[in-house]
Image (cartoon, rainbow, N blue to C red; front, side):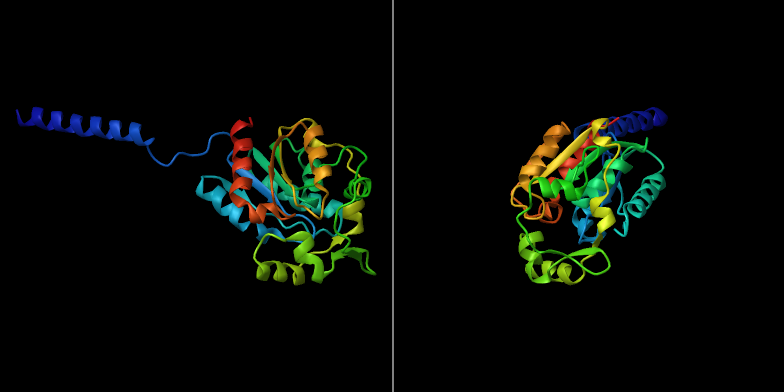
Length: 257
């Protein structure tokens, strides 16, 4: 009799647990679709700007990598990005900001890359470069300057207004003095095989961007047949709108195969 009572009690506990699990969704649910995300920075910035986005993605169950392409040449930037993709050891959503979009456009041909996400980024077609896109419909900023070594910078006094107008002033000021210049080779390299032609693509347009003309961003998103969202943001939309950025990445991850 005692054994029977224990069995009934155990069954009740198990049943109650199952009911509670069903009601609450059980343990913290792992993300569906792709679990790995690689976040690639663009010109004049480094990977630290992705911190808020990375924290959201990690909290939601994703594995995140933030490579640091040196922007010394297009080949070197491809090397660093492909190494990060390989290190994930499985399917990846590849994300690029600004010049990082040009990087992911070629690196995205890796078979482990299942979706691309462009955040206020260049998405060149075959034969195009970042430079040719800027020349076709110029950006608002006139503060880009080359040095004697063939690297390009943003004049620090114009950095906040032209690059990072909607983040805290002290953060924009530090980014200005810590900026990563981009080589002429990186900026003028012509893409040969755009991955967005064969991979699912998402695009965030920054409607107040002064570093890439929003008209060009919308054009690139449209021709890539991208899932597109638009935010009222400066060029660093991923920093001023991390929640929206993470949401777009997660939506692409969930729908990719």
